[in-house]
Image 1 (cartoon, rainbow, N blue to C red):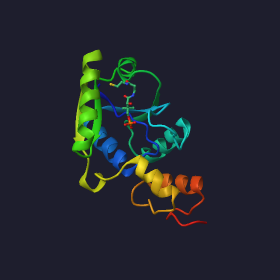
Image 2 (cartoon, rainbow, N blue to C red):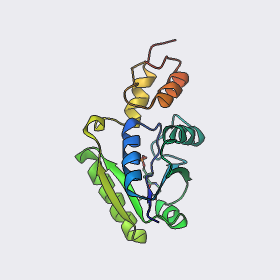
Image 3 (tube, protein in one colour):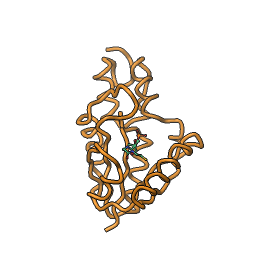
Length: 166
Ligand code: PNS
């Protein structure tokens, strides 16, 4: 069984994340999506449970994908879950430095390999932090996140799913 990890904070999951998870699921028998309990980025909008719930909803059509939670080191999680590969999306050169550093560190720690998938061009500008900011100020994020996520953002910020105050 070839098992891959697609880790992240997913606060919230975007169409760009979903694209990477869907494409990873085509190449591996099993894909686990470990969601970080305490994202390094300060001030998470959604709780771990909410982020996992949204991920479960939007990956429900992918039968080989399961959602997990990550508290310690990713390499330890990989060993516990017998995952041989980490898969990450690369949006632009700006992602590359940090992703390469993490890939090399993880390789040094346990020998695990990281595969990079290039983000589909229509999602190269997309990030959870921008989606949060746009939704917070009433902007329309309907084309950037799955409908279930747009609904949650609207509920959280008291706007309708197109970003208008309600
Ligand atoms: O979506 P993000 O926040 O960019 O994801 C970063 C993530 C979760 C992949 C990274 O922070 C991570 O692997 N965290 C687990 C702790 C760990 O193993 N740190 C050492 C990385 S070399």
